[in-house]
Image (tube, rainbow, N blue to C red; front, side):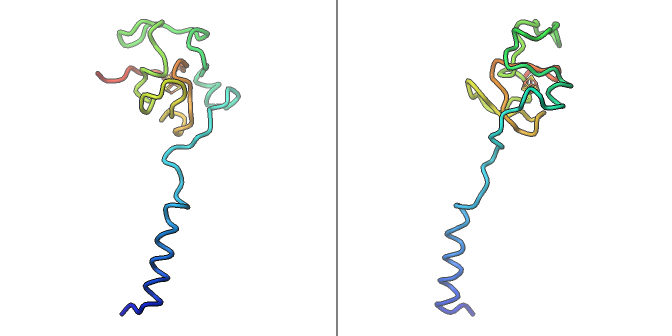
Length: 102
Ligand code: SF4
């Protein structure tokens, strides 16, 4: 049975939980020197990448912002599932680009 002191301790501990929760996504940007970024030819400006038409999408239309691995619709930086949810630029690109399902 829970007495008043035990209840207050539990309530106090529970009130701290939101203060120590981690954010849903890692906030780190993908460094261009990251081995995975190099391997996938990631660039922060898609215009600087050598792209080819892929899956019916013209090369010039391929950017992180319309890739299926880009989470959400953030207009500048957003998490990429291919890079463990680290941030990539909306206008970036890498060789892992796949169109978002419509
Ligand atoms: S997988 Fe998609 S969102 Fe992630 S870096 Fe490559 S093109 Fe951008």
